[in-house]
Length: 397
Image (cartoon, rainbow, N blue to C red; front, side):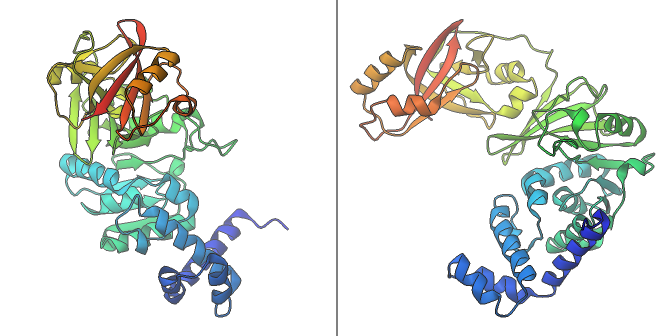
């Protein structure tokens, strides 16, 4: 028998609430040293099987969630909700931007999920959350309470496409899974809610931010918006589209976390500068690259690009910046594996890091063919230098 979606959703929520009322099972999981099978057998002596399964799932998700949240051990996750949740560092950074721009005004958080963004937004003022799933509405409330912001958050189980957005400050995190295939998509047209809704929201709400995949096709879709790319630990996490009264039209921003520094400007304000490879090579933060600010960064730091088809930068004197990873150049070789093997025979190395932005490179296959007889770490960067493909042997600074 097919259970109606609404009924199934509420039954799922009832199960999680039952688990909430049974903290002893979670404590046993947290302190157990038994194997998973033995632990399940022991727990089922005291608790019903459905509760044990849910508790084990939550315990596993809390362990995974520690990579995103400082209070993951107390939080409430489902698998998809955790996967799609904004990392704590990114969420609180965005909340700080809202705080700077609108202080403590009420914010409406659409498509809340487990509440990663909503919790951070609640740290600066009142938040109304909206999600179709009753479980997510409940999780957002519980997770806000974990951080001490429960009084600031009011959860609603509503369809955001049927809400009046006029005059509101809004944060939207649409589902990146295609409504047809349920697999991740890079096309905003296949988001849920989709591009048409987002464009309407940008025009009707007072202002706010859209959280999008950094790999999505957002360029040119939101005229008059401010585009921000945010990286965390060297990985580009999201594109934030600021709109309405919260945007500086046409401005691009690249923000590097946890440093908390931003590069701000126009992609068209700076002409590219090129030079031959010098003593140091730099791999720019992916947020800078996706924000189309590589030439602005090059100018600000006094660096030069290796090639018009590469984002790698170079300089004679070392430059330290959160927007680049620096490498000292040791050798420059043609893009030839035989010559590379010969180099390693003459210069023994151990661990090898392989990087490439645009040249086709099979890092696993290359690593297997290298004679790694030493102990020193080496970085190989496959890149075009003045229109020719090279292998640049470096060490991280």
